[in-house]
Image (cartoon, rainbow, N blue to C red; front, side):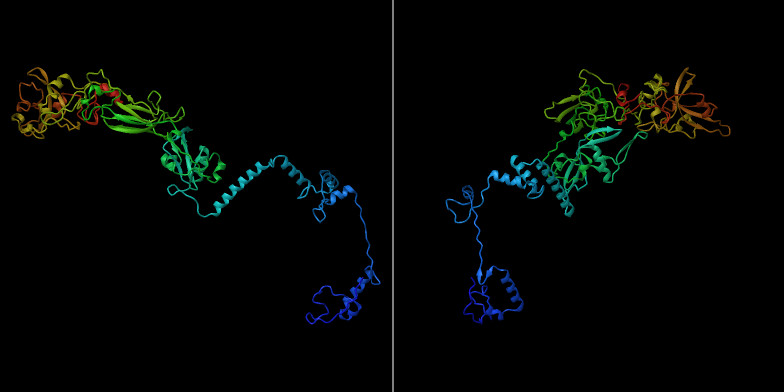
Length: 585
């Protein structure tokens, strides 16, 4: 029922009729209409017409809802532990009843959808393991790689090794090499990227990177027998395996797509030469016993089958990178360390690199000359080996033709040596006749070897002009020129003598031209080697015609004429027995 407002007074605090205590509940009646605005009055009138208040009375409608016992137990908290209404209790049956009723009203996809129920139930049945987790994990890894690539592009400071800049190609001492169409292809090779070394597992992929770096790949010109292009050994930086292991190791490069990947996390990998190829490292000692320039001082106990008699040992071997053969000489008592492959590189059958090699397990080293001891450093526990064991049973060796000098200090002619020459067929025969050797060339006092004796002063020389000082013009260590030796018939003794031209006399007035010569035979009438009585002259004959009628001996009197016997570097003439060791014929 409406209450008639009483004691309404003007409130000076809020300048209205509203009581400060009941600001929002001020009663409205006919008596306060004068205090309301026109529009508000009309709204109030309309509200009274629509309300259920009639004649100052309010009509209230009461409705009653009844519940049975089962429903009451579901709704009301019977123990009265709470003074408020309990939440609705939903059973499994009730849930499925509601679910069945709302089935077609539930969306197929979304937060509260059939898809949501399916995924939630499936997670529960599979212990919360989704079959798509592997795909999610893969996508996360790819996302991580992309973020790493983006970070590297956005980051202006790039990781780089201080000794080997990014883009540097690296190799170590050894290659696992094979020849393809004449081109050596050797791995392993690394490239520096982001301060790490990445190993090429494919030579074809390396060639792509090599070309991208501005280099030309190698090709083999069979016609010129020449390797063209930028050779790997010229562009690869050689690094010892110890230093290589100090460089961080990135992911391997197996295919072309790997070139675009980041270098990856550092991997702890130690590289050794033995992991790359089979090789030997050995200290080689030359056990030959001569320490002189005279090869005749070689002792039989120090002489080996392949001894080259030049006072050193020799070997050839394939270097570890498998691209070249190296030859080394070392002196008696000297020890060298050699690193060589156990086997040859994989060569084509028609390749020109193939050579005669040492028979046995080690075909990476060959052409071993001299008595050599092998003390192995690698592999471990490899026993010491001796190569070219001396001929213990030998008692004597062929002698080299040692230089011999006359009493005048000039070098003497020798059979199979200085001044001698081989026949035109190249056989090992002397061109010096036996009698010439005995009477002239083997005599150290013979006038032939004297370069200073003035034959023009001889009593029967008759002051000859254009005279020669001596009969010999050979030089030390060779025979640049020597006087020709002729055969002269000695009518008094009815025998042939050996003579040499020493001068002439020109014709003038009543004098006729004469030729002068010296008889060289050491037993000529008992005269001494430089006796003036050895000087003879022709009678009424020019020198050219006189000596032209004599037989000229076929000796090595000019360098371009002589087919000389071979010599060592020290000037010793090589015995025929050793020619095969020098490759002579």
